[in-house]
Length: 504
Image 1 (cartoon, rainbow, N blue to C red):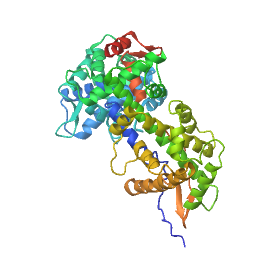
Image 2 (image 1 turned 30 degrees about the horizontal axis):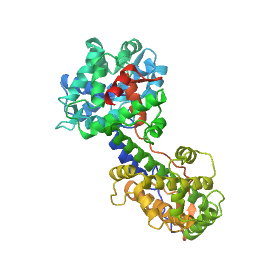
Image 3 (image 1 turned 180 degrees about the horizontal axis):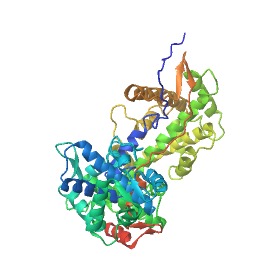
Image 4 (image 1 turned 90 degrees about the vertical axis):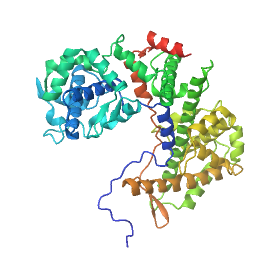
């Protein structure tokens, strides 16, 4: 008799956080970069959307949400077409726009792809386009947008209207009139797309009021800025400091590692406090990657038998393989291993690169993961400033898991041998936890993210897993700084250097 659930439809999903640890890091980096997300790709969208909302209002706006939705979607589709014609990136619907330009000839009728229920394949599936799916929440956080009593998003009376005004001033009244008319028409010619090229994301003039507005917005230069604005500004200044240190336009990984270690030259107090927050985030992400590597190892052990493995068999395999491993003192106690680890010399970055790589045996990666956990534990206990930043940024809430909860668990029985402590960790903090997390996703989201299943007291392999780092909004932040002429391919611009030096 088969007692397993009989699925009418089982949608297997990979599961981005199989151990429930990533979310703590995500909440931390969100607090360090408010107003920017991983899908807000260009700063000029902030001014463009405010102009779209203000233009809709000036044209005798309907309070019908469907009319507003059609207006936003047409504006986005047109922006994508203009950007595709100009060879721009970082724009929602750009793949659709490239195809339409290749297919449609001189006149492109985009209304059918933008209007809800239109006859053409939609330029984007999201109901309110990339505005609703990506930008609105961040712009509301920056006080650019709010909701009116009809539930329609409107530009705020202060910053929102300013953003709309500087965008319109930048493109000029003639282009603003043409842009609005093309949104109404839902049709555009190739010459008109070329004429509209100055509206694209890269066309922010370095001497314009528009650029100054975005600078003021991003760096929270108002007299009484919010804590969120100050946090964002400090992170952006740290990115500029990274560019100065590297001598080029840094990528997100370079920013992570530049902020991981205390600088040789002291930073101002507010910037050092923010750097410590980023160091705490990186330690958190390293811990979740290490735990994920142990999950990958546990899955590999389960997969050694087509009938699966019991929890006790997995525990015994972990203990045996670690105790017999030639590259680590795994017969010592966890306390001894931690004490013997030189946190300042630990190869954190090499461990990161190895554990997130598709190459390498899971057992070898598990050994690196254990050593990484010991290195993190030593760094945490040696550095009171880091421990305080971790306590602020990763508070213990209910069932939330984080660097703190994992280190506390390891320390709670640190006189046990490493092989025994890690075997217990694999069972209690990896295997059992994944089953619990996957069950919560199934109950709440109807997502089937189990990487193994329990059958007759044994765990049976379903899918492999590879550790995945979180993406802390650094790529769009770097692009924003490029868009407002503070960064370029060789690093800091003169304007960027002036901004950085004024803060140091």
